[in-house]
Amino acid sequence: MSSKKPDSRTPLISGNWKMNHNHFEAIQTIQKLAYALNPEDYDHVDVSVHPPFTDLRSVQTVLQADEVPISLGAQNCHWETSGAFTGEISPAMLAKLDVSYVIVGHSERRELFGETDEIVNRKLKAVLAAGMTPILCVGETLDERQAGAAEAKVDGQIAGSLAGVKADVVAAMVVAYEPIWAIGTGETATSSDAQQMCAHIRSRVADTWGADTAGSLRIQYGGSVKPSNAPELMSQPDIDGALVGGASLVADDFARIVNYRLYQA
Ligand code: PGA
Image: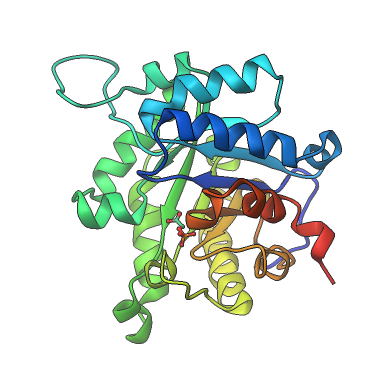
């Protein structure tokens, strides 16, 4: 299933800062980004930034004071609201900081911190219960792709991570397809490979939750997105946004990705 993008799927360009930028650097970066973007740029895209937890309050303060229409995002959270979970941050705490989007199931969380689909599912439901939007990451390793198992891996992640989530809720969510071999490697999936998997995800979602839900769901591509490849990736019919790591750390690069439409053929 591949469709022309409906207007409801406003592109979402998200910057995942990972474990980069202390709160001073974060303030500088968000100020530069706000300066690099014009008010009309936000008419075409939604923009979110996902700083480390220690930067959230600082970035929130800048966005609020300057009335910058960039959404605040987080990179992870726990599934409980409060309690004896040393070192964890709850969805309620993030919501209180005006966080709108929370990345769940990033491949680095899955691979380096042992997050299973079951854990991701719990986190995703907790994010929703706190009134925020999850950005659910899925994607295959290089071995899985070479073995022809990429779609099966992604199907399993979708089914497990979204288990028990209702259609109208899935419709308003974001899924990020991030092939693990393309993250931080400089290797990007070709735009047609990326399109193919995003279309596949949409059709799997249609099978389980219906065509309307699949038609509304925003699907991002992530993995070495740069100013140079964003225009072509974003021109694909089933790619509704980008989850950007490395290139989101430099305000001017990220602003060029946000403004990909100005560079489209
Ligand atoms: P990258 O990271 O853009 O540095 O490849 C993407 C991501 O991990 O979300």
